[in-house]
Length: 360
Image 1 (tube, rainbow, N blue to C red):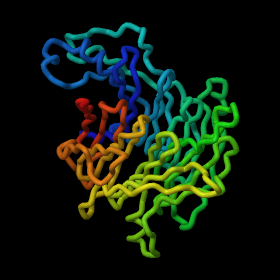
Image 2 (image 1 turned 90 degrees about the vertical axis):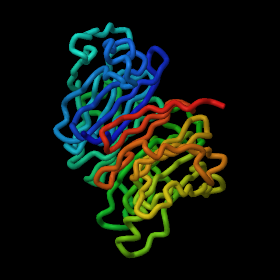
Image 3 (image 1 turned 135 degrees about the vertical axis):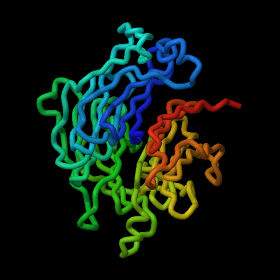
Image 4 (image 1 turned 30 degrees about the vertical axis):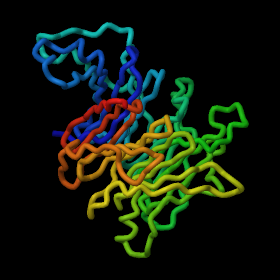
């Protein structure tokens, strides 16, 4: 089974969750949970499995990252083949084939409509801006690029390339996300918007999206980094996520570090450290924040998914110890929150799982 490395989730036309996944087989798959139930054959309806809506082919290597957003007509994926593909999403108003005789439910195979060329090595992560007008990418070539998703810029989509401030020669970016700085004084869509870029040494740079320059007072979310390679490796940030002005970073140490990036009197206020996975050798490999300001979800290399209340981070409020079966030191590769009660996760066992928590 091919590892599911990346997930994206948004609302479908019918009101339920719609998920896009990327895996080691180079495929990008679109899943519409509610429509899947209507498209299953009679035999399939007895299972809890979701039938794929569309399968996108075009990458020559494993898909490492995906991104799509509400009301946006395209999905994006990054791969070990160094490419970023753009996929046209099937309109929710378009009738689907009800091919129940094949058992596949009329799954459509689609190919990329275009791509973004600029990276020379594996693309590790993608992030869409809140308005979906900008796409950020980080890659093993030690660069972070900002792309316009506007069709009018299709010929030259690259808007900016960010230069990292490196303390070590071999430092590479690992993950990225957009975060609000709290400054909304301008009417520009990029006003008050910053791009967080995490690195293998445990540092995070904040870039002002409007000016494409590094913020003058970037926070450093990191463990205490020593001079030896083991200390640097332990501080490695595997994934970053944000909700408003709150930034969360999952680390190889097993911790998830939180920070508020709003500027107050020229300084940034640091948040708390979540001891998400205390066992030796277990890394925090995935993290996401809910826009409600309360829910935090983490995933570990041991295959465990945990739910946290950000108002009390001393212990998880729920955990699934059998979420994903670990394989070759990998477990949970990605987690995404659709709502306070619905979460999706992908892992090394080749599964994408959807959880629905009961409300109290």
